[in-house]
Length: 349
Image 1 (tube, rainbow, N blue to C red):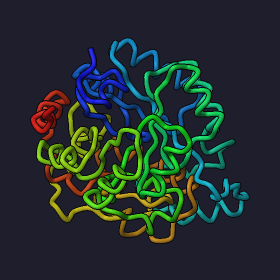
Image 2: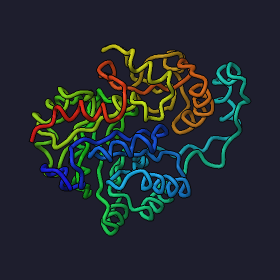
Image 3: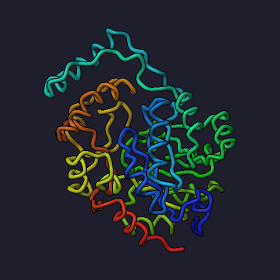
Image 4: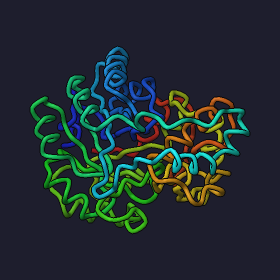
């Protein structure tokens, strides 16, 4: 049974708490735990092909009978799809060769593709029919909006500026996630460069609430009951929380990654393009300090991903992407149930 607010009624959930979708870092266990607790669990599908999307949706349905969201990255308007030559790729690989050597890995060869197409992923999502599809990095196309509506799927879009929120509402999304610059992970700006779209949540949220009529979900810097109360007081219909859940034991984060989040202080995040080629917020390490001239996205993301995953398995935090928000220091760890319980203390209807 859904809760009393308009976001809860829209999404069929009990509480206005949404799990942030982690591209490449989502887990079925965490997504299901948040959904089972009455929030909206989310699963990031970046890099997933159609078969893997189908398998993931089946696994989620086996773990929860509650609504959950699947998340897709849209192409950024005007950003070219890089197609490096062998020589260009060799230059990019050479720049990263010390990291491969340090881990005893062979440098990779050029893949057939860096990631599946959005069309392939969308078709798989439509076949899976989650309760919710959330998108980042752009405005959904008319085809996408029409298709998800026909499938009975709710659509969430993510904005980092007021103009982006207005554009998303005009395109037909059911709710807007207003993502403040405090948020961890990639800055999902799409109308202007990410560096020109760094608006803090306290400023962004009330302006988005005033500018659109659809429900607004606040994201960025929310890690405990105080953040939830503040967001709701500023007009949000709900909150989206990432880092605090990433520190929970059900997440896909390596133990060393979770420990780094729990040890973080208030000033312990940086904005960097180093690990992926796109601007993102995370904890500083060798990668953020040394990778000052990265290859374009998705080349850099794919190349560093070949060794970052190994570093994660070995607990080498200096060679991982430690995405985290500015309120990482408020994370308490424990279980997803513990995180939900803390957040729900800030909910009053």
